[in-house]
Image (cartoon, rainbow over all chains, first blue to last red; front, side, top):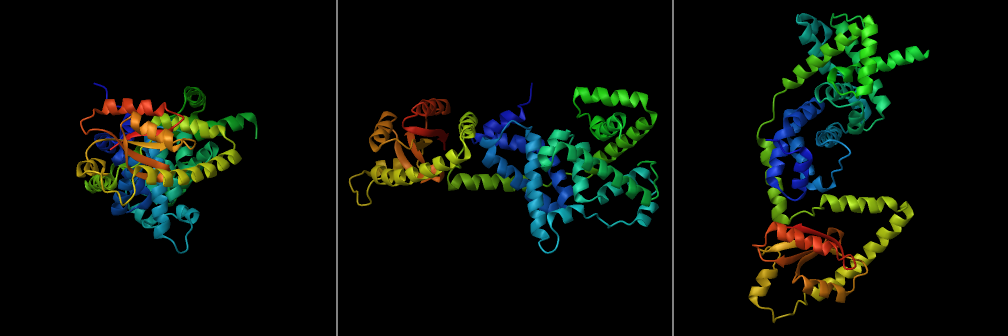
Length: 186
Length: 226
């Protein structure tokens, strides 16, 4: 038996089919949640935001354009929601660009050094990347989005996607070096 | 920078997508050829694969959300339905409409929108007075009132009347389809009309709506609704 395609589910949702909404939610909510959680770093807020993401889908299913996959469309909505939520929570000094560039300093290099497992150090450094860099790394490696799809989700040109990914990886190498892991690149 | 250097940089930048399996076939061939001839690039590719593996582990370790978001979503949807079904635009119609609007110049689009808004306003007033009836009307029976109440069981459609449609055209349209306006105008100048009994099959309702969509001189929009 072949599963109903995401696009077919969106068509049914546009006609008001709640069961189709359930199916689409079941299929995508965990990935959308993880994407949002990595951006907002707050489980309760991430849960609120995914309700809003799928509510937008319910309301706007009739306007879905097949220029991107449903999964990519969901992540684009989720990203906008997460950025709006972050903006509301950091209204004072940080603008979006600055907030995105701030790295998490929760775990300093000395602490990381104590973690003997290289994989664990790597994961620790991945978590400490700025939101902008975390986002692109997650989209490429975990959400398996192509250059063009990332460009569509983040709203930047394809060449900037490649450059940003390269910078994110270089920054990762620097963090690893500071944590005592020399990769020999760049 | 030589052409060769540029090609090497290009390929290097593509390594993450190659590892994730999201490159097109042309780029896959380029990257694989470069990996085969450049040992240092192959070593750097091993780093990319390591990053990918740990990114996946990191994300998988984030767990899953509680049932709360689904509960909240469904209760919001139910609440919306209780307030009155949202305007749902059928996909095919939405695409046709988009195509039509894309062909208009920005200036033409702006004038059309302004003219349409004015016509909708005038039409809304006329339709409300003509078809919803004067407040003092006393001869309608209780059964008719119940049937035409917005929440009464029945088969419903949302329609928007063409800007050039006259009151006579609308009357004829309603008579033809044995329809009555029960609610409106809503956002976009749409009216909810009752077109049949509650038992009317969805497929029948859709057929009826398709027929209405063909009445271009009178109807600019028609869609099934709840």
